[in-house]
Image (spheres, rainbow over the protein chains, first blue to last red):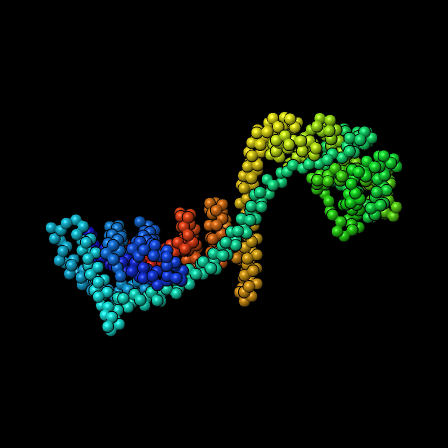
Amino acid sequence: MKNFPVVVEGGQTLANAVELGVTLLGETVGAELSADVLSDIGRDQLGMTLLAGIRQELTRRAQI
Amino acid sequence: MLTKEFVQESVSISNFFAERGKSITAAPNTALSRLVRSQDEKLRNAVILGGTDVRGNPNLQPGFEADLAVNLLCNSADQTINEITESNGFMGVHAEILDQEVQCSKQALLSVFHTARQVVMPQVKRLHEDVQNAMENNIHGRASRFEVVTSGTPNLYTSQSFRDRIAPYAGVGQGQVTVFPRYFTPASDDALAEMVKTGMDSIDAEYDEALGGSDVLRDLWNAFFVASAQMPAGAPALTMAQIAESPDSDRYFVGLYLLADAALSNRIPEGVQYVAQGVDPIRAVSDICTNLRALVGKALFIRSNQAVESVAGRRLVIRYDDYKAYVNGPVYDEFIEGGGTQEMILGNLLQRGKVYSMDEMLQRGAELEAAWARGVAIVMETDRSNSMTIQRRVAAEVFKVMLTEIQEANPQAIVNVNQLTSTFLKTYDGLPETERRDFHLGATKLICRTLYTDPCFEQILMQMFSIKKEQPDASMDLVVTLAFVNYVGRWLASQIVTNRRL
C-alpha cells in the first residue's frame, strides 16, 4: 500500500461521512423516510448505499 | 457507531483513489471536517506509531497494511465511543459533535427535500400532464377525423327534371369559387323561399325536400350574398370548404345553386337592396353568379351521377373525401349485418384506389381492415413526428398560464413572464430528444431550470424518476427513501475534496 497515512486519512474521512449519514438518516425517520422501508433496508445496507453514492460522486468529480 | 464493514469499505475506496494519485480529505469548515477533527490527534498518533512499527518490515504479508489501517480506524472510533459515560451524561467529544452536526443539518436537508416533493414536483406534474393532454389531442386529432357518414341520397339527385337542369354543367372544368356576390342586404326566410321557386309545384316540392328547411337558404344568403357591413349579428360565416365538408353539404350545394340561379335571373326578393360602391352591382352579380352557378352545378352533376349509380348498383360508398366515407344508408345497414365493418370502408378510403361494391368489400374484408390499421398507424406516426414543434409551443403556453397563476397567488412576487418564458424556451431547445419524448424528464428540467434553480431540486426529482424506472414496482415510500438516501450521499460527497498530491 503506497502512502499509508494518506489512505488512512481518506478512510477516516469516508468512515466518518458514513457515520454522519447513517445517524442523520436515523434521525429523519418519520419526516420524509418511512420507518418500515428503512427497517427493511437495514443499517448496514444503508451505510453501504451511502458509501457507493459517495464513491460514485467522487469518481465522477475526480474524473477517474 | 461504525462497523468494521464500513471501515473496510472506506479504506478500500481511499486506497483506490490513492493508487490513482488522489487523496481524500474533508473540506474545511464542514460538518464532516469538524467530525473528523475530533478524532485526528488520536488517529495521527496511532498511524505514526503503527506505521513506524510496521512499514518496511520485509515479513509483512500482502494486505497487512490494509488490515492495519482498518484496525487503527476501528480502535480510534472505539476510543471515542468508549468515552460515553452515562453517569455524567458526557457522550465523548466525537459523539457529542456527531449529535450536534446531525441536529444542525437535519432540518435544512429535510426542508430542501420537502420543497422538492411538495412544491416543485406538483409543478412538474402539472406541466407534464397539461402538455401531454394537449399533445394527445393533437396526435390523435387527424386519426379521429376519419369516419363513416351514412347519408340518405336526396331524391332530387335522381329526379330527371333536376338532372336535365344541371346537365349543361357536365363539361365545366375544375375550379374553386373564390369570389362571391356580396352586394345585397339581408332577406327574410319567406322572401328567400319565394326567390328560388320555379313556379312548378312538383319541382318546387323536390327542392323543398332537398333543402330540408329555411335555415340553409338564410345561412347561405347571409354568408355569400349579403354585403359584409350588412351581415346580421350572429350569422354564421360559412366558407366553401365548410359547406363541402358539412354533413349537410347536399342541402348547401342545392341551396347555393338555386340562389345563384335566381340572382342571375334577377329574381331578387322584395325589399332587398343592392349595396355597392364604385361598381355596377347588377353586372358584378351577373359575372360572379355565372361562375358560381356553373361550378356548383358541376358539383351537383357529379353527386347526382354518383347517387344514380349508387341506387342502381346498390353501391355501398357514395363518395370519399380526405377523411370521410359517405355511404348509402340502407346498403350500409345490410353491409354491417353481413359482417362488414367501418374499418373495411376506411381501409378502402385510405387505399385511394378502386371503390369496391358491397360484395367486393366483404370479400376483401381482412385486406381492407389491415390497410386501415397500417394507414392509420402511419398517419399517427407522421403526426407524432411533427409533434415536437407543437410540443414546444404548447409547453410555453402552459408555462405562461402557470406563471400567471403563481403571480395571482403571490401578488407580492415579481414574475417577469417574458424573461422566464425566454429561459424556458432556451432550456427546451437544449433538451435531448429523449427528454422531449419522455416529457416527464423534460418537464422536470424545464421547471427546475426556470423556477426552482437550486440544482438540488433537479437532482432529487431526477433521482426519483431514475429509481422508479429501474424498479417499476417499487412503492412510493421506497422511492422517496432511496432518493433521500441518495441526496444525503451527495450532501456528504459535497463535503469531501479529492486532491492530486501523491
